[in-house]
Length: 366
Ligand SMILES: Cc1ncc(COP(=O)(O)O)c(C=O)c1O
Image 1 (cartoon, rainbow, N blue to C red):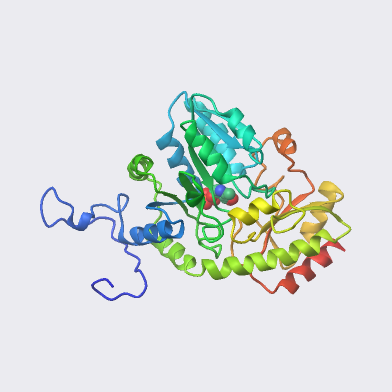
Image 2 (image 1 turned 60 degrees about the vertical axis):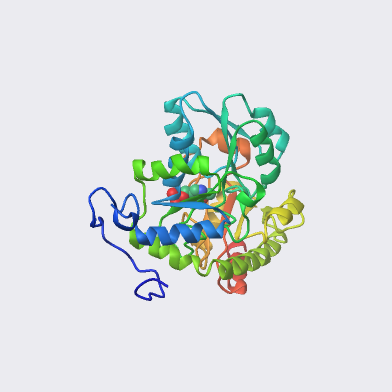
């Protein structure tokens, strides 16, 4: 308990902090970009969610990613990345980081030996998503982290899709877990934020330095919102997974659907790996519609309970058309190479009554 007995962490708005003595920040606090009590409370919570020693909060998932890249890489370094990543992550690599002389190789990380084959002498990071966005592919986080470490590289896992309740990359051997807290950790589509967690002190030092030096920190109000959302993460993830399983099982039976990507289906190619490294298969899935772009447009315009919007991980169900929305920044040829077609639709299954969701999908497909 703190000195006032607050049950809920207060929103601590002060941008600066008075010093009782010259040359000594009182209680370690000096200026809110450097450190703020509401943000510290959030960072303690985030570290505990990933069983990590350290966590840092940021103003967005992209801000967390940018800080990782600018802290751990320099000109001449190389990154091996999964080939099915959030479009904004790929844009950050290609448009911003390449200009500073960092090279990227994209591989299908479902096959661990492909990641191994792409590692060079100057590879500093292996960057993974599992499940991937939007194809829901799974890679072996433990095996890849071990081989990266043997070759002198750190593994960063974007754990946004799973959330820390379903998967803990650091426990599996990764060096850093990164999240868009905008998604499941916040959980209510009402705040944009990001976070990274690590138990590696040598990585934490430059990351912490650059959280302040680069300055992409969240406001105290945003920290409060993420703290509040995180309290129900376990309850929401159980329900997201339960609903998504029902939705996936419904969709595989539909004549207008040619494929469903969901790690909770036995037909998923990495079903047993997903069961080993995730507690539950989660709330995200993607569907390939027969009839390509025309079928996708028709389906999207007929949904009523699912809202057509970017983002994911909130209590309300959302639907996304990756080719024209979240992954529009990925060049068409690259998209098609990995399998992001015009007929692919991504669902973020919310916590509503599953039968309302299935009725909505049935009528949009009919
Ligand atoms: C997997 C993944 N990583 C990172 C991000 C970026 O997070 P933010 O939008 O909070 O910057 C997103 C956003 O959609 C995402 O889906």
